[in-house]
Image (cartoon, rainbow, N blue to C red):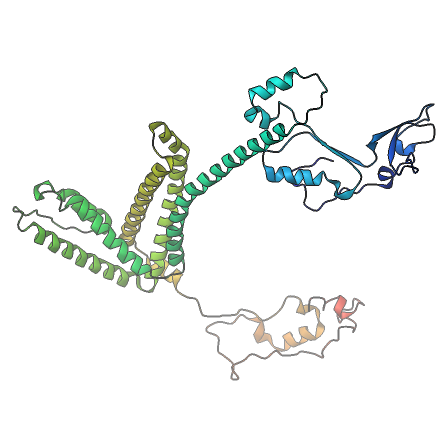
Length: 426
């Protein structure tokens, strides 16, 4: 039996009667001894033929003998293996051995101890509390190292967990159709604030403003053709900037109203598709960028920098860049989307029910049904035009013959019962 780190999980090693009780037991002393050589037929001692001498070894008791060849690096697993080696009250023995070539001793073993043990003769029994304490200290070091690894992994994953919450909440709201227009209005405000801060910031002089880039941005994202003339004096620059922002917002609202009137009732569905496509595409690209950052961020430690702090900063910048890309893609597609008349017709609800036939393909095997169908030839032709509801408002089934019992002979003439033939699926 090989004990693994699943030991102590409730599985017992059942000992047979020949292992627990031997024929060579010394009943006078009450000891259950195993024979090394015996004159009688010692089948329990695995002797093929009796020998002339019989010697007993009191230290070799019958039962389950367990040999431990290595100590685990975790004390929790090691204690489980020790408990498993206890045999739960069954007779036997347990012995654990250590090797200087074990990974635990090779990494944490001292040179002094290795030198002492190398000078001892081969086969010498070595038991000392110092070795036990050394093994426990080595196990504590390994456990502390593994704990730090898991803690660091959790700290790194917490950064992505916060970003996942933002993206997943946004995507779930869009998927369920909640506040789609509010999200669109927020994207418009964020994009305008970013553009005005980037191209005509208050922190620089008006002659350093990049108005050409601002006009190109408004043309690319919002499809707006606005002529931007920079004022000559600084005194009127702030008033001019406020009036420009108000003008841009008004034109954007006009474009949105025109687009909503153009698309009609499917405006929200179109926005949902645009949002979901942009979020999914940009989020997958962001995950690839985060994986590449995670692989190389450890090199920052050579520059005497905190790796976790650097990872948080870089991940935040990548997340902001991803959100800007999502806003840019959503707004660009929302102001440029066009739906043809064929697509509008395809999206229209289809509530008109025009049945073509009320005949089941398996009913023509009954003679009574065939005669009923011949008496009503009009039912063989498909219904054309809109279906007129009956006077009662509810279609009642019409029985064309007597009811057939489940144990009655089948009308098809097979000789079987109806429930075993044509009425099997009824």
